[in-house]
Image (cartoon, rainbow, N blue to C red; front, side, top):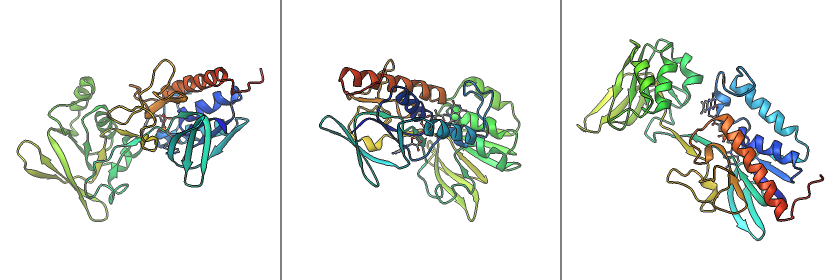
Length: 311
Ligand SMILES: Cc1cc2nc3c(=O)[nH]c(=O)nc-3n(C[C@H](O)[C@H](O)[C@H](O)COP(=O)(O)OP(=O)(O)OC[C@H]3O[C@@H](n4cnc5c(N)ncnc54)[C@H](O)[C@@H]3O)c2cc1C
């Protein structure tokens, strides 16, 4: 039985692994991939200690850091289930089961999808989920950004230097993102306006995207924008399904934590980063909260006299 199993290989999971190793906790880290969501970013400017670093390089450095930790076993697999057993928890992957006294959850989140015809078919062929990464590909093209929150507004900002025309579609009747950013993008001639009460219906195309059909939720009328790019910026979905009801979650599926200790509702389980109800979803915050989680787990194991720190 492990002292702890860390689930996730993003900044949260890696920070937890580094701290678990320092405390000599018998640890298994299970991660489907390394580096986390910002691996796809062209450049990251706010990872503290680095003026800037490409996302792919940060991912590589995170993996290196985890693999350099003595005593941490690493399994590159997807966790399918986590459940309580006598004296701890059992984690199931595609190839086996692993038991631990405690769990540290850092499984992050993934982009929310529109769930409409054409979205999957044209993913990477005009449908995009990362404006920072893909904006240059749409140079001189007409594009639509779906989602009027901060992510949507920032996607418009990213596209302004490249696209020829940009439309913003928002499901509700108001823009949810920062007014300052909205004012800023409205100054660009390329920004052709925000379409409110717009419910996306279908992505059109043959080999590549040729249009986006949406329904005006007030009039019920369907309209089509002849865009060749559709950026989907409608939020994120936490990777928490494999937990079932093991820990308490909010209505978005985010794990509810005590932000002082990173404790979840279940004794012996801590969680950090984008999979939690943390307000700010950022690399440094995931790492910081995961440090809290690892130190809390260590304290818990000490108290239970189940850890054997050689200090
Ligand atoms: C395009 C983009 C750009 C961004 N740019 C920045 C930026 O510039 N600066 C910044 O601070 N933040 C940025 N962010 C936000 C930042 O990436 C996240 O806040 C951060 O990655 C969260 O880290 P995390 O460790 O909590 O989770 P994640 O990064 O989501 O990592 C989750 C990890 O868990 C693994 N995992 C998930 N489910 C399972 C499972 N069932 N079994 C096993 N492993 C699993 C994944 O493979 C991954 O290794 C960006 C996000 C995106 C999408």
